[in-house]
Image 1 (cartoon, rainbow, N blue to C red):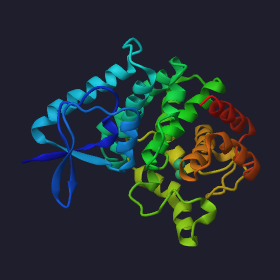
Image 2 (cartoon, rainbow, N blue to C red):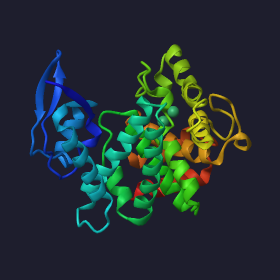
Image 3 (tube, rainbow, N blue to C red):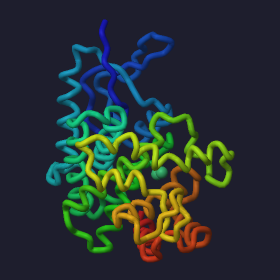
Image 4 (spheres, rainbow, N blue to C red):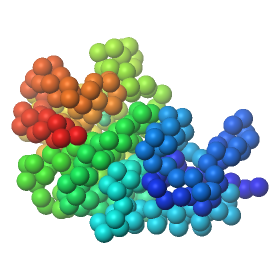
Length: 308
Ligand SMILES: [Fe+2]
Ligand SMILES: [Fe+2]
């Protein structure tokens, strides 16, 4: 029998799957999710706890899977579907994560990039037009410390921050979002355990970590379909306005969109990778990283997180 791989991040929400999904164990396909199952709330969490990235379906089920996917995403974005916000948010978070993983794995594909870019604009609309969306998205915990999921969280915080700063140009918001989704491309496919607190990294690990923005940017800068703003965000998202980032750039040299992503990224690094509670993260930044990020960003991120 022939199988094709699918991403676990696409199996979300209350819509039942109408195909069987398998995992590969010692080169054998084992039935893991049955036709008729659905994945929301606790079941989603249990699924993510397994840290599975890929599953398999029978090639003959591919069309059924594609239509499940499309239906699931369309319903989730539909403000009139009557579905509850948490279930919609789980599907939409998964779709954004899937778009990110797709570009990470296929950086040469214009189609993957374009669909992540179109998806970024939809995501901005979803967050801007649904007051409960931010909370619902932030409730989808990154239990497996996934870098693409972290990208979605950084995008979410960046959009919320842009909204508070009244930056409403839709084109810029789209590029900000796409850049935030892809910002940690430099971590894709490396052996570095990014979930270690930076102060606890060994010298070689810290060196790898310091290089990840540059490495990420290097891998995409010759690709014509990548927007310059997105490349800037990948290259500059660990920079700090006081010149204490890996490339020691200062505020005046940084793309303003990168500064927004850098602030959001600093917050979610603490929450997702260093285990700091959401309620503590901003306080921690205020105390330990004075002057590295615009004070206004940090205060606004504090307000944003207070509601979640
Ligand atoms: Fe990073
Ligand atoms: Fe990051």
